[in-house]
Image (cartoon, rainbow, N blue to C red; front, top):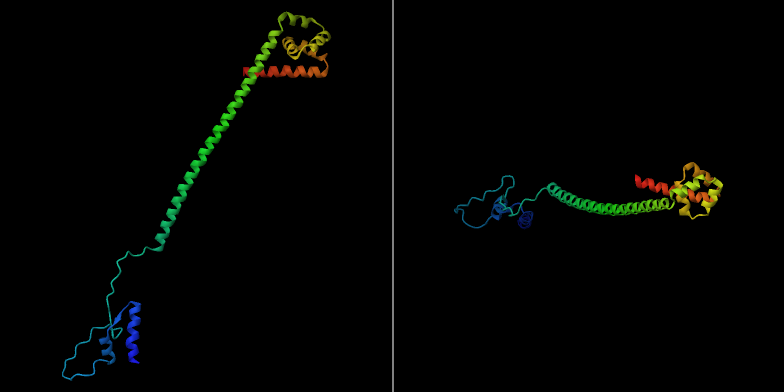
Length: 209
């Protein structure tokens, strides 16, 4: 079975890429050297072999010219750093976008509030102007007349007036006199004039404040 060993063993070692067997060394080890020749011929020394593996000679294998592979942990950390950096950048951009949208929303709300305040101020100004007009329509002499009238008579005349004129007179009357006059009116008319009087007074107070 020596021929099979001569073929298979070197082939297996060559495939593994560790060592290469030399035929002369293997032949010398197993007695398969040249059978002819005279006894006078000086035999050559066999090649030096590995003492642990008789018949095998160490062969220096050249390392390929390539960079040593980096540890998997280092590559993994680089991947984590890249991912975290990308996430941080994306988060910062998202936060900036949210802040810009928030500022726009607040600005829009501020515009609405300013418009509401302007409308409120215009309403108050209109009420103050109306009150001043009402007071101007009731001169002092007319107020003196109604102040001296009996509440029943004054109530009958003021009830027949339009809302603006009635309100103007009641505003200039003393509180006790105005209360007595309105006490003689029907409940619906008195409530209507009360709303007008309280509204005019409230709007006037808001304008002053």
